[in-house]
Length: 144
Image 1 (cartoon, helix red, strand yellow):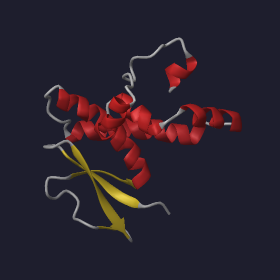
Image 2 (image 1 turned 90 degrees about the vertical axis):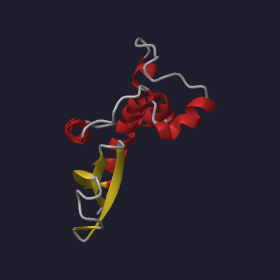
Image 3 (image 1 turned 180 degrees about the vertical axis):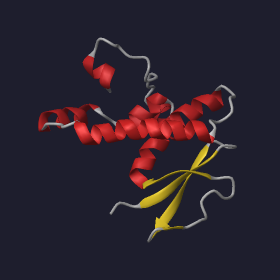
């Protein structure tokens, strides 16, 4: 089974924490030290969510806005779960489509273009445009 964690969020700093779970027991007591539980989840699913939200948190920080509240994060989590689960349940990729995605999708570059702080060096080094600066009439540009 995939590695399970309790995804936690600290509203004061806008940061996430992975509280490892071993045999159904978390390493740290959930909801302590300012960390609020968001979800009991597989680490790789949590990682995808955190990458997405970190893009938005970085933008808020740049605008000198407060981090999101835990309530907002939990709402975003449930929206993320809808998309994630819908994709898993309903989208079938044929080998050609999967190869097309592999050819055009670069996770680190996509995150850099979305403003993820962990990929800021890549955005600068490759002089990447922002993700929202794209040609909406170009299939590849619109979807990657």
